[in-house]
Image (cartoon, rainbow, N blue to C red; front, side, top):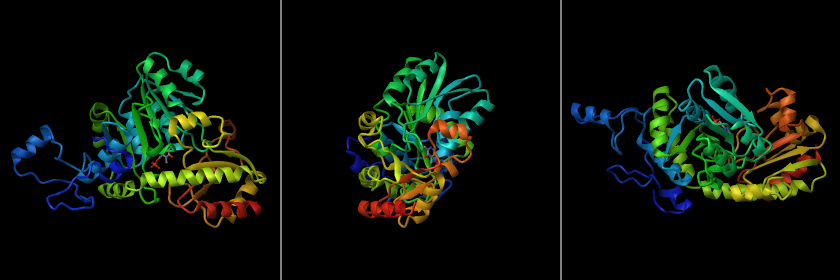
Length: 392
Ligand SMILES: *Cc1c(COP(=O)(O)O)cnc(C)c1O
């Protein structure tokens, strides 16, 4: 790793060139690698060198470029690229846990993350305790000696509630627990999770890293020891590795990741400010606004409010649907971090399965809209939102 700044790393870090000296990152669409001799095959299986690969499920030159680039960005020694964000979350947890272990997690989680903690881990005898992620007293009570891992999303979906990474890491480390952070909403650009105490940082690279809604991908970032000794054996033998084609798309996308995330976050702030003044909007949630209860924490933790804005259309589900159907630029979908602005109605889509009581607890009201702000001109976006609100 070098001491380059973010934008330089995003363009150059991890690049491996073949004997042709190609300028652009090459895509190695190969599952295997030919050995010069039986002896060299044997030697590689004993210990593969830096530039030696065995099988694409174990590693591939294009995938390795992506891993090195994102590890450098995140400030970790190493990373392992996975087939999706969920393969990353599942791998990070399952690779390190065994029956009888105890995990503490925040409750406000992406549906599939909740499934892994609630359904998968418990099925294999792992004890899971859920806490309200913003409440440090609950973390202090739940993280007792013997807890192996602590898991949380640093900014929750869709209500943009933050978990204090530094404070929770201190609590976890006092009992020797590993801190695993799903950092998707913070983006790798605004993330300082490792500096703030996280041990393992997980991303769905489907989101901002791809940035154009093309490919599913994920990555787990951590120390060389943890990634190679704990995570890699599980990932390479269970088949959750990233495709070289996806890694190649991500490498291309990363050159503009910093520019894109900052432009999206600038527009998100302008959108949030504009929505705060709209009579048809009963509530605006954006960590970059002074009105957000954790505004100070957001600025200290990310230096930005991020690229998502959540708000409530007055008039419940009917008004929210009329608003969404009237949008001309923003698309109705459920991805995020895309160049195209996306409006999502969590109560009927991403969080549909949750019982009403759980929705109430998480603040997922019938009028709630989650907006992933894209790269369009902010003035056009605000005009689109205003004309759609007028029809709500
Ligand atoms: C999207 C997402 C995931 C899952 O990622 P996939 O790439 O869809 O598998 C996990 N956590 C969070 C917070 C997400 O937004």
